[in-house]
Length: 115
Image (cartoon, rainbow, N blue to C red):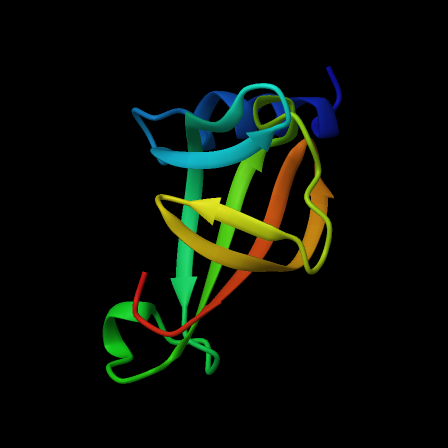
């Protein structure tokens, strides 16, 4: 096994492990036949204000950024920029997406109340 393969294995077994770093959150998607589908998925979430500080230190800020790290195979699709994305019952706009070793990094933004 080379270094890149070992790092990918570590990402899935350590970082995306709910006993280590990952947490379970609800992602809501829409299906034409089934309607809204609420799925509990393991992911890592970072929340920041526009100036890069963690959300808990940003009182009165009306724009909230969230970075979601989730396995591509678990989510089942790749969101596109400007798409709406429902996370834990709050709606966000997708601002950016990248795939880093099978892990999607999704940058979300919400206006208004703190999610």
